Figure: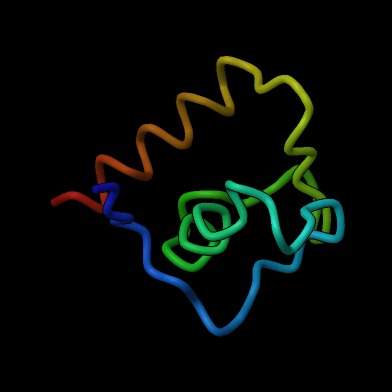
Length: 68
């Protein structure tokens, strides 16, 4: 049995380049709601793009702070 640990949010993240029915949509909505994911602009995430080391480091730091 597969159990999802990511809750479903009523309000979607504001990214226009994230489709509603992808396998990662709920994770993006959760990450945005928790302040972990900010996107590359106010309305773009570029989910198929390549993340820089700085972007990955920022996400890891935000997750670490959230876990405290």
